[in-house]
Image (cartoon, rainbow, N blue to C red):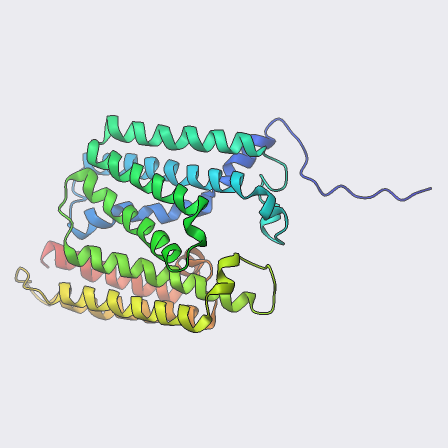
Length: 305
């Protein structure tokens, strides 16, 4: 009697496509959208429930926009993902979600986010969100295959997250905020690419094809350059004239925590283990302590203690 071959395909249930769409939207990546708080926090503007409600709305809209991009990306790359040892388990590649359904859901989600932003948050917020969507779709279609431009696009996506909270609240964005945030994002993006390149050495097809056209030396140069520029931008901001503080110069002292945070993250980048930035940030206790120390010093600077 022939032995039955086990079927490892995902079980089809009424909730299968819905759960697959949710997985394709990458809930673990939503933590990145907390960056919408960056500009209001930097300006000390988290001072009312109205502000909190508006930022919660912006967070939800940006999360919808980012999820739309993931859905479109997976629908487009389904065939290629099926040949990948890890990505083949994604719901679209695994056949749990039809590619057409993922694409239509992504289009509707993206358009809905842009329209809702225009109606509820104003023209500038909607324009920034729409620009993010256009840029990310262009990345999925073409730009992710262009050397250097792919790094710039991903880093700019993080910068837009950090900008949109300030735009929604009408907060002027300082040059130091933009420089520090932009280069900080490039630092993390290049460190992620470097880690992927290190881990894929000798493993053909283990990750994105573009990495085979970068050298690890070049990616190391990029994340080191970006880290230095981010630190320089932050230090120049911190050393600018600021209101007198009662006891200690917290704004200047926060430089120490900021630099330590960059140095701590660089440990993982140098080891080639920064391929999942959210895991490094959320699971490394020393980095969390450094982050809390920075937040405390920055907060005391804002309130003038």
